[in-house]
Image (tube, rainbow over the protein chains, first blue to last red):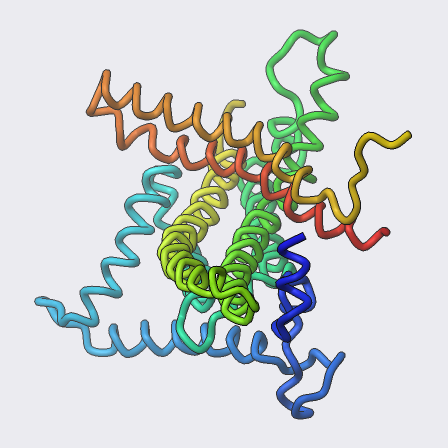
Length: 265
Length: 76
């Protein structure tokens, strides 16, 4: 009841909805229902360009005693190579480290846009971008598995667990469902839903502050400060989620590759 | 005779119910990790990737709840 009265009073579009993720078009300026070039598109190109330029610049003139820029770039690469790729894949992991590092940096940077002041929306809050990343991981682990074991042995390892024969009719469909259907879907959905929910939560508390401020009652107005304080606190929570999701995406990709390369089940 | 009536969307209550299971699950994952690290501190680095994989798999259930809440909300 109070919520409805508040929402009616103010001109702020209060309960934020999915519509808030569809930003107006940039290239035909301000046009609605035209999504070829929006802020999201620009952000994806910007992230790709920033990563390429940063790594090129920081490694253009490598020093034995690294400069600050080179040190940061090497730490990022070293972290992904040692703590993810080599930890999970052993000596074979070094070959995958460049891709994992690129993936980690791209997910981290595009996620980080969701709390960067002024930008404040992540391309990953649209399902399309996580889907492409998940499809790359999906194709990667199947390709690597087939190249390593051969077609028949890869699917035999992936689908047939070491179990008594009479339970296999039950286990094979479950293995197929979990490995080849659920894996890519959850990989994409996890990143998407985290970014989507994070943006939604920040919208609720930020817009909610304006709604409270616009309310008629003098007792409700000061509560807007609490709402805005909450949105600042939740921004720090978002920072945690951003780093965690980038890490989890890479670790899961590595673990799928590990499963594809494993000799026995 | 109507004792109680609810209008509007029940999605928030549904999501609250859906989050119970993953909440317990994520708690179990970290409880197990903390306990194993307390018993054998040198194993902490070895078990950490499994913690994040387990956490991510369980968390996916809660996130499916968010996503499907919005997908099926369009049906009405």
